[in-house]
Amino acid sequence: MKNLKQDLELLYEFQKYDIRIYNLREKINKISLEIEDKKRALELKNRRTGLSARKENFINLNSLRNEKETLLDSKEKKINKCLKELNIVKSNDIYKALSSEIEKAKEYKNVLENEILELMEKIDREYAVIKTNENELKEIEQKIENEMCEIKSFTKKLEKEINEIEKEREEQKLKVNKTILSQYERLRDGGRNEKAIYVIDGESCGGCGILLRPQLINQVQKYHELVFCDNCSRILLKK
Image (cartoon, rainbow, N blue to C red; front, side, top):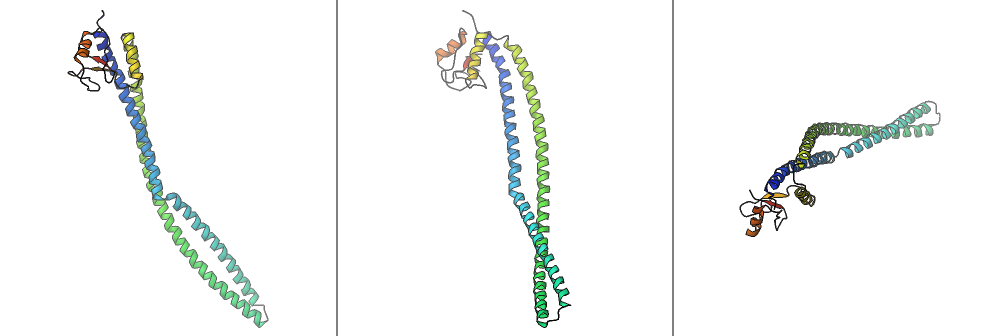
């Protein structure tokens, strides 16, 4: 009966390629989550500044100012028109009516001018806050963009490293017993992507830590067949 010790030890060494690939892919996944976190942080910061609402308010204030300036212009035209008419009227009643209308228009004009001044002050304050928030966000955005460029560059390096390891793995794969390799791959496909073969640690499985039956350990030490942990089903190896 063939002794599988050398084959299993070779498989154990071969597994190191898969462990390295697995760990590198985990790093890439972690980095992907990091990128998403940074994007969310920027969105959250944007929302907290209320920049969109402030910009909308800034537009509304300007719109209101324009309306009042248009109204002010119409009042000024009306006052000028009434003043011209005042110079040519002959009726005392019409003169009094025009004078009263001019006074009312002037009072309303003063109110409008004050309202416009108040609006302009609000607009200036809002603009200052918007510019400050925009500059802060730009700085944060630039910082995050730089960090993301570094992260993406690091990810490319990891992916290149994975490709190199995978090439080495394919070369070493040819040296591994095909029957044993097939069983190993099935275990990995079954969800054990990190490790599928473990060295016995004392009398326990090196994978799940369960205490192994003495008969099972004896079977492993004979190396006549593949022996699996009763608990986690990983291939066992005794060194």
